[in-house]
Amino acid sequence: MQRVLVLNAGSSSLKFKLFTAAGTSLGEAGLGGQFDRIGDVANCTLKASQPGAAPGMKPRKWELKVPAQDHVGAMKGILDFIKENVSATFASEVVAVGHRIVHGLDLSQPVLLTPSSTATIKQAAVLAPLHNPPGLQGIEAATEVFSGVPQVAVFDTAFHQTMPPHAYMYGLPYELYEKHKIRRYGFHGTSHKYLVEQAAAMLGKPVSDTNVITCHLGNGSSVAAVRGGQCVDTSMGLTPLEGLLMGTRCGDMDPAVVLHIQNQCGLNVKETDTLLNKKSGLLGLTGSNDLRAVIEGAGKGELRSQLGLDMFTYRVRKYIGAYTAALDGKVDAVVFSAGIGENSPFIRKLIAEPLHAMGMQLDHAANDTAVGRAGVISTPGSRVQLLVIPTDEELSIAEQTLQVAKGALGAAAA
Ligand code: ADP
Image (cartoon, rainbow, N blue to C red; front, side):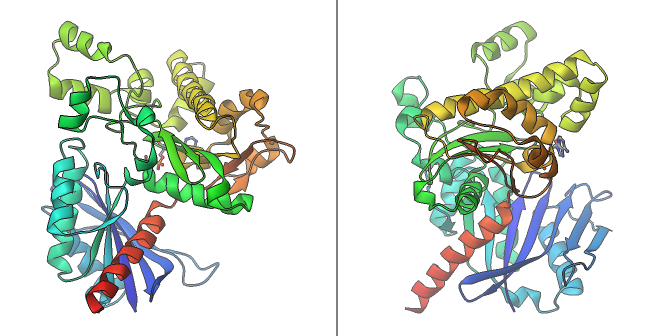
């Protein structure tokens, strides 16, 4: 059997998902899981689950303590685990490995990993210091385990490369863009691309004829404005810190706040980075980065939780308004996705209900039942469709990986 392996490396984690493949088409998603606390040998865990072999059958689940010093060790742990539980010949069945890489500078397409494309990922690490280095470790680990198998990098930034300069430039001296590539890049691109394709399918229109605002609302959150399948603006910027209020990130604010914090509180660059990326957002305002806890707190009358809730939903609404303007008022659908967007009718209601004057009419009954699954949550008469679509970044990465890898294999054979 041929298989495609998708890897998503975090600083101390390595997520994986296996897909079957037949020729150029991708088959079912099978085993998936996550290695956590890599490096913390005593607490390193490997969790995995495999869907039931037939509809209605229970999924299989594993949770094991498997020591791994680093990502190469974790990759070997995953390999041993899969050999033992899925297929003894697994290593030779993998025809392509796809990597989620957060920052690809101005690369607009997934690329086959070569010394030159790997060098670009290393270069982009300056702009994504928390994300690209573990991605490179994942590549190194897979190269050691699957030597000779084509590997493909799929970038979070790629889908947003169609943004026009007036959307991606900052109002800074032009030299900073020329010399240091300082501009807006956008992230969660694989998710936004997938959501746009699914939305067009749900509307029964070609992607090239569909205008969508996609709201990826999870621990990290972003919104994108997409005209005819091409991204024209997105809320994240040079890094994933810009835009919406997030679990632990502050999102949009006056950049002078940073200077003020450094002057008044004596924080250095690293401390400021930690403050803005890891201690702010819902966590900084309410004490929890989990929106469920914030909703519960607000329900009990806690003022800061109510503030966090109001700020989170207000900013999403503000971006939907701004992106309606970016699309010249011609919006076919607004999509809600990721942990919050897929699972919380309450949050969707807070965001969408006040937007009826913009042609977005929420159907309350449909909204309440679309939890963890796709659905239309607007009324039949709504000018703009409101959709819930579960995102599937791994599936999108696997599809793009297979496409690039097959192209490379074909070229090698010719
Ligand atoms: P990540 O960005 O880490 O991939 P997810 O997309 O998994 O995040 O989203 C995680 C977030 O989704 C959690 O922080 C949690 O607050 C939120 N979430 C999940 N289910 C619900 C729910 N029913 N109501 C509100 N928020 C939810």
